[in-house]
Length: 306
Image (cartoon, rainbow, N blue to C red):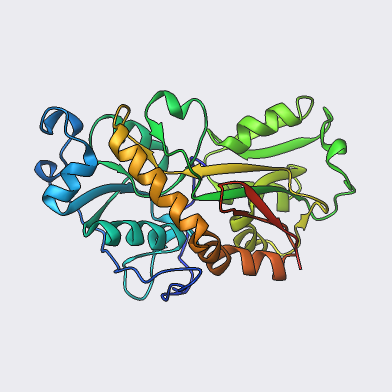
C-alpha cells in the first residue's frame, strides 16, 4: 500500500464474509489505548514473542490507518473498522482467540511507530519496499497484490506506456509511495510531480496540469467518481506490488506463524475470495481492469477484465 492517503468518506459497508472463499470474523472496534496499554517490545518479558504476549493477554495492539477504502475504513453507519484488511485481520485474531485493538496512526508514520513500540504489529498490509524492510520484518507471504494502472488526462492522445517516457510528459505521484519509486524507474525521462494526497493527483490530471498519474486498482473507482472525464490507459497493468503484514525485527515466532496462517488461507481461497468481494469483482467488471489474486502458493493469478 502507498504511504499517503486522503481522508475520504467511506463507502457503504459490506459486512458479511465469504465462507469457502471467506470466513466469519468477529468485528473488533478501534480503541484509543492509553500509553500503558501499548506495550513496546522493550517492555515485554525478555525474549517473549509478540505472539506469546497476545496469547497471554488475549489482546493485540495493531497499528492501522483507516482512510483507505475499500481496504480499511470506518463504516459510516457504525463507525467501526471495516474493509478487506479488517476482514482478514479479524479472522486472524479470531483464530488466535485474541481481541484486536486498532491503534490509528497516519500511514506514513506507522513504520516509525512500530519501531518505537507504539503497537505490536501493523494490522494492515503494506507494500514490501526494501527501504521499509530496514525498519522491521515483512511476513513471507502476501496478503494481496496491488495492480497499478496509468490514468490519463481527459484529452490525452497517449495510447501506449512508451509514450510516457518523454521529457514533455508530466506524471503525478503521491510522495513516498511505491508508485513514486517505480514511476521514476519506468519513465526516467518524464517529469515527476509529487503530491501529499491522492486527491491531489486527480485534480492535477483532470485539470490538465499533468498528463497522467499512476494509481492502484482499488483507488480507480473513487478517482473516476471524482473526475469521470479521466481515461485509463488501455492494456495490461503497469506493475504489481506485493503487500503483507509488517512486524518487529527479530520476532521469528510471530513472523513464522503469520506467514503460515496466510499460506493456509490462500490454499483455501480465503484471500482471493475476500479480494474479489471488496475489490476485484467491481474493478474487473465495471472498469474492465485485470486483477491479480493471491494464488495458493503466493503467486499472482491474473484475472482479465470482463
